[in-house]
Image (cartoon, rainbow, N blue to C red):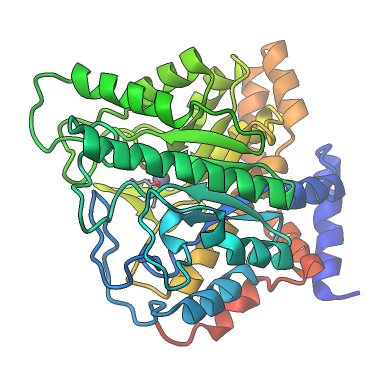
Length: 408
Ligand code: RNT
Ligand code: ZN
């Protein structure tokens, strides 16, 4: 018996005394998909415009060496990162990771052909795919005004892009036998005071109606809100209220909540149950807001734990879709991808290891003292031993992976 296995047996016993079956937890933990974003590997550069600057309220800061410069480097580094991430994984792509095969294809003309290699890759690795239209970082367009643009020609371009992308999502879902979530985020908004906040929202509503007109069997659309962003400090038409209303009234999409897109003291976990109460699904961007930045690498912090606790409390694993979203160019990008995704799954494990039934029972009985006591007592149980065993049993390195991180 290895040390890791021996330690696990001890942990299993301790959790067992609390009424938690660690074997069952690990089986479930491994099945719950976490959608890992691909764009930490190259600071969201993509392959469409390899030299273009990013624009549209999105910025990766830092000068760590090792940003992937070619498709080959990108794939090598992505594989290295995925090798460090246990559990059922989906990979979230942006449209800019297309392969134009040397042709001149505009963003509103893309189709499955530009993503064939990604489907092959996903099949080989046994992972799912999620998708994101890229309504920003286009050298010819102002990213602050896409689906809300009063210019019909420009708005048409972005609507066509949205339509093209969800068809690609449908192709992913069909090919891989696991539904694709196509997430729509726009950076539209205003730096300064806006008097008419209604008109852009009416235009956005019409754009979404056009994008979502066709029902697609293998694709789910989500719309990601933001309260403010870089260059949209004063007004963002795509707010949480807007998309929540849109989803509720049309039933054509679900809402995506990014942990960094709310007021700085607001966390997203407590919001989930309001959506679940109406039978709605939700997409998440697990991220880490720091001051004005919404996208630091995910760590095992309280808001992340709270997100997973809320999912585990309602057994809502198939209704709340977990995805990550962060980009930090100041540290090794392969490691960053792995750190964030591992931390997200670690938070999920911690949440699953709580004696949820017992806690709910105490709550129903009104024993709030014992509820608090139990919550506190469970915090220092040996979850780390369970994690190490989980990694070993999946053939993914446990904490020893950090030995290889010799340089930044
Ligand atoms: C931006 C949103 C969005 C992006 C990705 C790259 O504020 O969070 O999800 O980070 O689409
Ligand atoms: Zn996001």
